[in-house]
Length: 156
Image 1 (cartoon, rainbow, N blue to C red):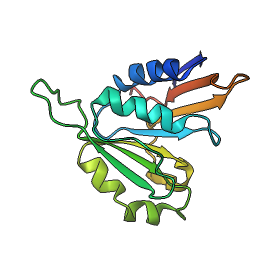
Image 2: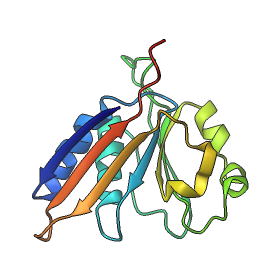
Image 3: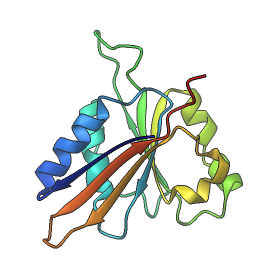
C-alpha cells in the first residue's frame, strides 16, 4: 500500500497537491474521492482537470451525476495522457447496475480517468488498485488533510 498525507491551509495549496497527483494518473485510472459535504472534492477535481488539460468548467455533478471534461490531444501527448476526465457523483444511484448504465465501462475503454464521489455505490466496479483521495476538514475554513493512497498489485 502506498500512502501520502499532507496538510493544506488554502485552496491554492489544495490545487498544488492535486496538480502533483495528476502526474501519477494514466488512462483508465479510477480516483475515489472521499470526504464530507464541503470537504473540497470538487475543488480537488477542478485542479485535476486543469493539470490534465481538460476543457470546460468543472462543477459538482451532484444533480446531473456525470460530467465529462475532454482532454484535447496535444502533439507531444504521451500514451499516458487520458482522453478525458469524468467526474461522477454516485450518491443518487442504487448500485452497480446503475453505475454501468451511466457508461462506466465505456469511459474506461475510452481511456478516461474517472474521479468518483460516493465510490461505495459502485461496489465491485471499483478496481482494487484504484486511487483513494480522502479529504478531511480541518480547524480553519480552508484547512484540510488530504490523504492519497493506492493498493499496489502483488509483485509476484
